[in-house]
Figure 1 (tube, rainbow, N blue to C red):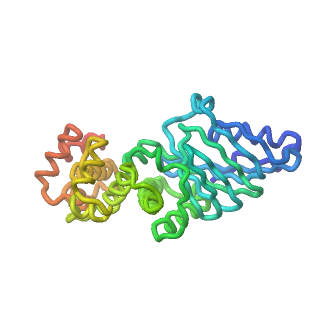
Figure 2 (cartoon, helix red, strand yellow):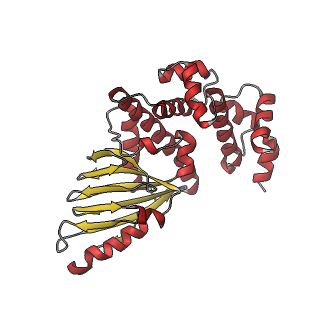
Figure 3 (cartoon, rainbow, N blue to C red):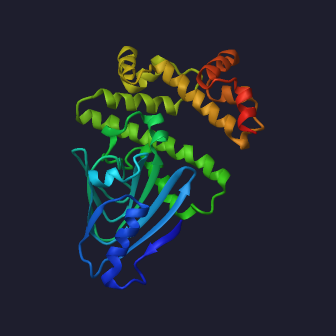
Length: 317
């Protein structure tokens, strides 16, 4: 990651104001108040992994406010995944409050107001994820914001460890490696959010939106399993098939339709990937859980308007 701002060579009286301008531009628009202007210090680095933007920043204690005024001039097409490295940050959004320590993660939606308080020597990594990529895996994310994803389970620990390595390797990765890493990170986020929502469900009412997240996380984790069906997905989520389909009907889909849509999307991504030119269409389809090529070709054409082989030729032009 490249350093895009540092207070190191800036006069103390100007440090916070310069930092505020940089953070509003490179992170998200907001208002902030430093704990102490005279001693304030900060550094901001940036990078990318495929379509995911990365911003790492260390700063002295301060409070931040993201209001509807900032939202009106911001980018509503992104979601923020925050991973704390050092110090602490307290965040509040949509009536929920979360405090992140080292290793903890949360999701924040910049299309909604939020408030935060950074401790002294706070060190945080923010992933700016295209909303479409996350909602394709998780559905609507409003109930998922400002929840603590702690490294207390295997899924969460793996995500936290993966994010911890990003600042050290971003910038040295080839474009091919970034393209492979991007969906891997999104899948880990999906699994971790799904696990966290399932744990929160035990402590609160089991709302339909929480069940939807679980169902999507289960599907995403087992797409390559050809035996995946409505019964196994519902069972893994701890609900009946009937209830699962009723919940997914809120988004005009069902378990079977969701499995098929996500498999088709994965196959389309593979067909677009120049590094997978050596794989046949059937290898790709079988790899993502399809067992009948006639059925796959028919479903692919219904979804994208063209047969898989023709689609590959088109995107390869």
